Amino acid sequence: MPETNTSQPGLPLADCGEAWQATPAGARILERQHQLIVHMISAWPRRHCSLVEIGCGTGQFLEIFWSAGFDVTGTDARRLCLDRAGERMGRRAALRVAPSDHLPFDDDDFDYAAVIGKPGYDPASGLHEAFRLARRGVLLVFFNRWSLFHLECALRSFTVSGVIRACGKVPAGIRDALNACRRAASADDAEASARSPSGSSGRGTMREKNCGYCWSSPADIAAGMQAYINKRPDAFRSSLFLPSFCWREARGGVSRSGLLPFGAVAAYRLDISSFSGTTRKLITARIAPAVR
Image 1 (tube, rainbow, N blue to C red):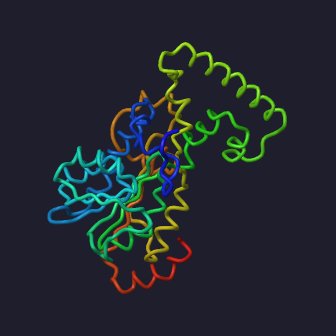
Image 2 (cartoon, rainbow, N blue to C red; image 1 turned 45 degrees about the vertical axis):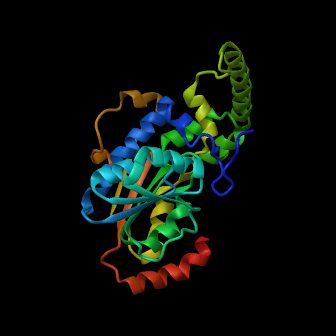
């Protein structure tokens, strides 16, 4: 059995997300996350500015921040993932092994902080530390519960409980039909796995239900960010509005449609440099017990 990460469960330590990134949907999500990040940080000054990415994984997003001009630091609870980030970044980034909810830095140690959702990692777990560490702004990228992709993942898991969570109450007839589909899919996957030399059915999207997406709604994320400094986020964008089997046809970068809150991946940016440090710390201290 692969070793698992107890502080951030859902992703094996031996994987660090590479298997997910190799799937068609995973590669497309990663590409759109890159585009969202570049678009959202375009309003931030970069020269001589520091940025910490909380839960950086293997460092694929650290490269984006470094290329944009930031002095970057990455943290993650998984040492193996940070080792791979070190191989990727070399001396371009400082790396620290630490859980997302307890980082070994002082208040306001960085200009900016970024928390980016990955399979097996809930970005909301690093939100408190992001606001504690950042002086000027926070970026949060997450998997959107309001998206068609979320509904697709629930349906593809072929579990009645998953469909009920996504859609609400399900009539008994539909429940029976879903159970029949689940049994048929399980038999089909077993047959495909038996034919495959690697023991995999080759259905990337079907297998992504095991990647442990952590879903959040834009309303919950916006309210959570606003609670820290009593200020609404300054920018929002989302991408990948269609089910994953249509993503192959998607073209272009972040457009005006990105203002709609229904993309599979979404991002908020909140600029805090205009708020006094004392006011921000008082608000953060007041809500910290509830967040933790």
